[in-house]
Image (cartoon, helix red, strand yellow):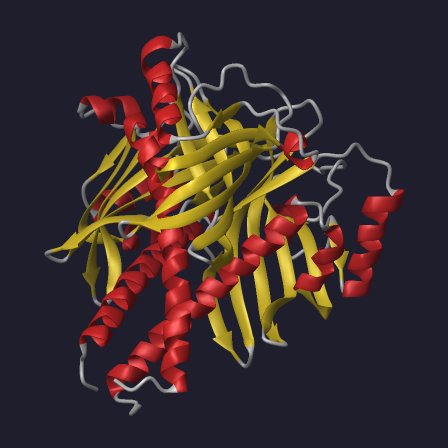
Length: 170
Length: 170
Length: 170
């Protein structure tokens, strides 16, 4: 097939659509893993040295380092999962993520940056569903073995209240 | 046009994008019909022998049959709509569905399985909007007369509380 | 490249996907501007004579003109932004928009009509995040200088309660 300008444009449009689609699918798969409580799958969404941070918006905007959760490798994430599932005493609850369409901000040198708004609802046993944590994902994505993975995922949440009952990653 | 390998890949990518897009549109149209209170349109999103079930997550995960609503044909759905609009005494309320991007899990033998997280907000007259029902759609879709329809739609909601005021389908 | 029927279909599918994608991106960018408090950017999402209206569902459905906010040009929007940021005394709060996939209803004569459900969450200083305003965007979009802009954006919200503390556009 001869690549005329029209065809090249077509390819470019398709590549953009395809990347965006893949990111939306990644976000949905990530949410499903957490909501289904498949916590062992959670570190696999990251690269081996991937970063995960859950930080209040106020600290994020002031450039303060304080974060509710800050993990800097899959190994740290596995420790966290062990804590969640084996050692931390807590009242269990269901989570439900509803995530907006992703915004792809840039894609160069193999790194794609993207953002999306999220709302997480919590349901405790015998309780009603309630707004739990809302905010914005700020992500760096890389391709490994054909799949997109998080080089870093930063979840910046709006509420300044310390949620001492927040146990599971968002 | 000669279908070179590149073109075949292009077609495959486009087919996947297109199917996913169509599912997202179906989900949005379904939500709009309910939120606009066009209840007579609701059964038309299903095949003639389509199934609709609204079930608590706890029952779903334990494999228990108990469900808040379980309808096994358009005819049963029409009966339900008649009940909602004509006979059941209830305080009316508005609903508003916010649905995440769909996850297409498989597509073979003419049946596509897909899932999406949803949050439904309820607003009663002179009341504030509140979280009403959050959960996951688990769907089987088939194509009929060119359009995708639900062979089955299962809405699994997180709250174990019996919502005796839940009248409308989700 | 010769445009065979197959290619024309391909182009049509791609054009539809591409438009829909562009609208979802516009919606996400609009939400991000408001949630990031970049209020000066807000009028730029509209045409110079663009309309913005925030109206209760009850008034909308009865065809009543009463609206919480009704602005009929970028100039009026800039005045509103000046009011928000400089003169109106109000307790500040964060907003977070979660928007469903868009429904494209028509696209002819250069005007695309589209709708999407939205939920806005509010977080006040030292407060929890709460459901603030949920409803439906009803939009007319036109292309200017290569980008889609709102010829009009109508946000119809479900709660009949007057939110006297609603300061920022939705």
